[in-house]
Length: 240
Image 1 (tube, rainbow, N blue to C red):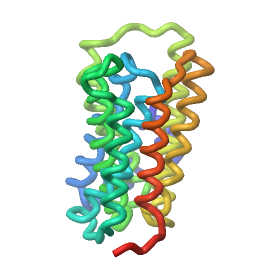
Image 2: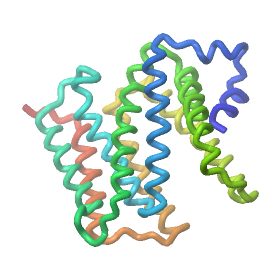
Image 3: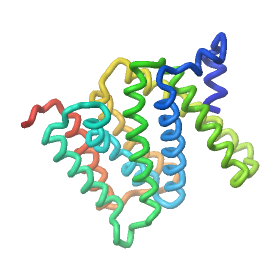
Image 4: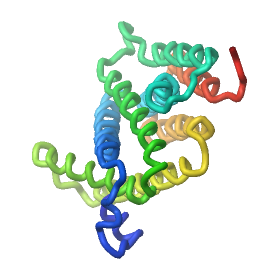
């Protein structure tokens, strides 16, 4: 759906215009990160609630902070390292390893967070070399190829209801990725990242309305700590 919709929406004069990249290796890695993020996150949601799973994935701004030094050559202030530690405490409260609420599959969501962090860093780097259309099309194409190879092992003919949901998923994925890539062309990663925490609110509302999932008190505290840590990372405070 992602690739097909891009071809319909963009209508390039030739497919070649979308496939030419100045950094093909980075494009391939980004595409693989896109696949792994989705596969890990969707697999985790089979066993853990939507809000908790989303909150684990949204430790990614903290991981971006830790990775921005070696990958983006950005200096990380001491206060930001404190924020990373705070966010990690929040993840421990949500996941609660060793507790009765812990499910090992929560580690899949944590893996999705790592993959998503690398995905965002590469997106930022690619914006200096390729257009957002090229970046999104190549990532979508790689995702389509990889998941098509896996398809014979898991395919079930969907009902009309689920087929419509899959189409809507493809539409929303295309729109969100295009908007995110476009935003990175006009603002720094540190400026945009805090807005991503709105997804925690939406995930909580959707989980409650459609699946009757309500996080417990400890989980809610952990989610708030993750948000606090993420916002602290991208604060404008100069701390030395």
